[in-house]
Length: 472
Image (cartoon, rainbow, N blue to C red; front, side):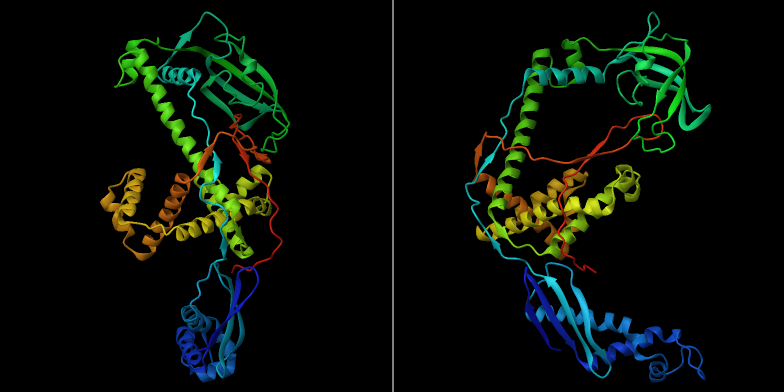
């Protein structure tokens, strides 16, 4: 078997591989044995005709699909080894010549790891947020804790006010007909929560327990249920209860109820301050680390193959689809709710995919340039971290990293983390905040039950590269 490689532009190569005649004949014979029962030749029982008659009758091409699978993949792997080349993308394979009298000649076009020209990366200056814990933040945490142990107390001596919680039966109708999802009994609703369509909660204010009344509303024009969007409807209401939230007094007894470590209000405030400070310091350090890496990446020069960026775009799209599916939606439903299509989403993923690939390449290059190493202790610490994250025993999880593939994945993650840590240790922090980047936003829609779920969806929009690539 002969093989050769040709260097193309943009870190692409074209590898040409020849499979000898005898090897391809062997692959044809294996293909025939696999498919013999499919062939019917006059004068022979089905599957009993010899290979020569089958190929004469149907043509040799009838065996090519499986024969190519049998012969090409091993030849491809062997050629990579002989030429000492490692693909950085999926190959685009093309058959140039094929036949039992000549073997197979095929070529594969794929990317190789591009050269990284590192710019300044050691000692870069990057923004690190100042750690501040204001008194208002502490009081907000205390109020949150009070609300968590608060009680709803029924009242009967006044009408509904903003902030009350009411218990209602409601029934929605359009043109006198009830619409799907518009009815409920004993529904508990906080006035001001904005969990219903605009106007619903406000029109309950001023009514008293026992009242039965109608409210006229109009669904928003952008409402995703087409039969309700922009439509006038009537909700019939039965107001059954009014409740107010009663917060516990902020005293030492409250503190002892909500924490095991503090006995007084002052101790509690100081404990909250320490916790918020620790969290803020971690967030500031993470922001600093990200900014340091971004500076190092910005200073590097790489000619990234288009196909590599496109493959990363597809990986990111599939990951997004999996996350959407976990929320009970298909990707098609998600796109319909946003009023988008796959092409638009893919275009939005171009810039982040390119940045992700470039970041990984730069971190790998710095790791090598600084002769950093991964130790067994680093691996043990990483597995311990994963074990805590997933609630497993470290020794049990360690067994999952005994294979070479799993070990490579572990080392790949460690290489990035160690490099980022090294960069941060050698960087200089500044309190000068960078200019904010501009983003385009797309927004979600409401469901058709009368509730406004209010989840906004945003994505940075970037024009996709016009380069067409075949990633099959």
